[in-house]
Length: 116
Length: 114
Image (tube, rainbow over all chains, first blue to last red; front, side, top):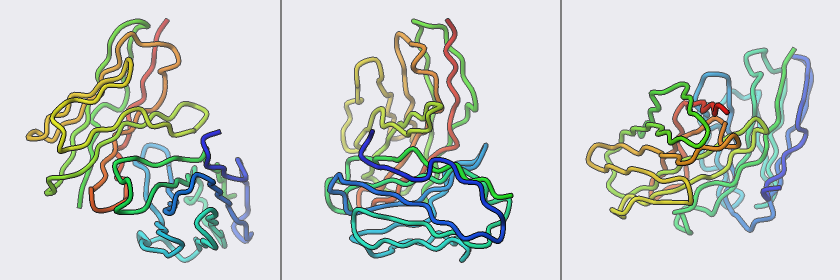
């Protein structure tokens, strides 16, 4: 247990389904992130939230919709995904910019998503 | 924009031997942070070691050490006395001092032979 919990661990969904990924941290961090990890590609930053506000959307398609109701929780709502969206989705948290930024992230174990 | 390059897709090392993983990066900034993360089959990304660019001394964490060459923009990871548990994907990452985005390299798979 690293302090960042992601659920579910595995998810199989059809292209017309709607599902949500959940991320939770109780480390006192105020920044949270979604990354996509596909085979043989570098981790792709999707979204950044600082103090519950979205500060970065890395040209992510609108079929991915993040939500950050508070500094401890982050969701990724999925709708009408494509097979190429199958990947490992990693959530991470850290102190925000300007605060102890010499530390890296704490990651969750990820959700393995398969779109069929 | 910053980029991180790991030129070794895969490396192998004999148990108890030493291996070095390479990483180069590109940035116009002078103050930043560099990290090595380990991702075993469990998928958990674990921070192995970090280096602050303004520090000349290379970081060391037990069997893990780095060779930080700021002018060359190189940040290699040396693993001494390799153990079977070191087998994993290793990622090099960069973070600006003023921001909180981590930019990752493509990763290096490390295999440890017994």
